[in-house]
Picture 1: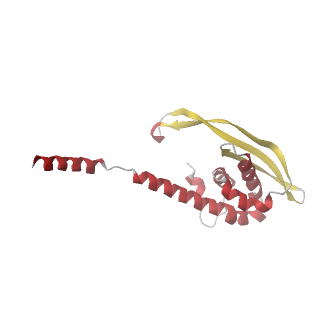
Picture 2: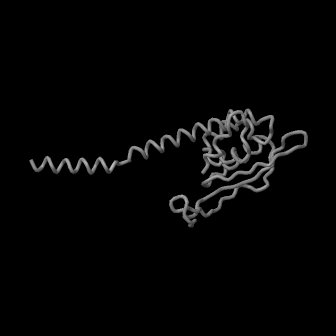
Picture 3: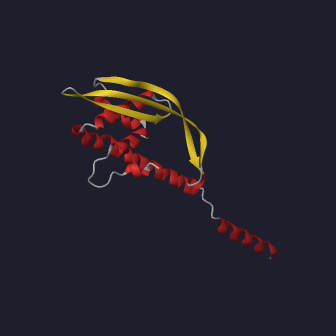
Length: 168
């Protein structure tokens, strides 16, 4: 679902929907160092971090009729960051879990990425490492899943061969 947002294309700056999808999945270990110098900027809460539940829906086979799968914990917030010269940008973030610090940093990053003067630097310092991290995470998950794969055709053939050896 998120893969369409992970790649802005060659030579194109990421759009807000793309970076928000990345920020929602960015671990706090990547947010903290990338935003360390920006944390002290004056900001005003429009919606302080709050935790709640959201219903997750699924589809049978990925294409079937929707059904309610269950609830997940989500934390959200919105803040206004002064950009200078009397201008301000609003940053919004939603993250899975209860981390108020993580959602605060994601909203701050969203606000800062809306400033064209800071967008390229934050793209290099934050978004590119996040993209690499998510690709590595996906590769590890695929490798772990592939290690549990069973080829039933081979198992059936081996078990048939075992029976023939016992008969001799």
